Length: 160
Image 1 (cartoon, rainbow, N blue to C red):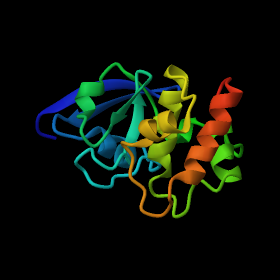
Image 2 (cartoon, rainbow, N blue to C red):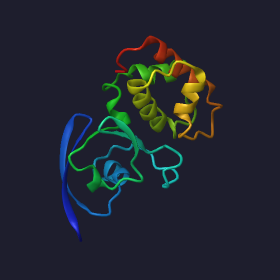
Image 3 (cartoon, one colour):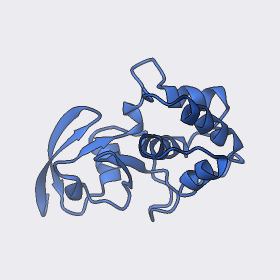
Image 4 (cartoon, rainbow, N blue to C red):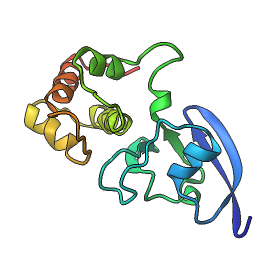
């Protein structure tokens, strides 16, 4: 491997140390090196939001981030939202409100919403829609997603 750099990341609570090519995207590292395929790659330009993960607690586009830029970071992916066999509260709200259709964009929405619910009040539908504006879905009219987020924003508490 030319220009290999050793990185260490904590992903969904597990520490991983790997030698990676200096040009490897974080999305490719997560998907191909670690098998965390819930992080989807859509536009590869940071526009659609499908690749959104939490990097040190804040949403980030993994298709625009080099793996070496995340060295030492704590990362959460959609796989970390629920427990094996159990949906987290956010995932359950999406299910209850029919907030997904084909599911391709769903992991990015879930990670964006996780960040927003942890750090912002999201007290109105307009605030929820603004929070979701960086994620693109071609299947829904977003209303079901807004309904799911509204339920959680009102309930407050941990999302897992």
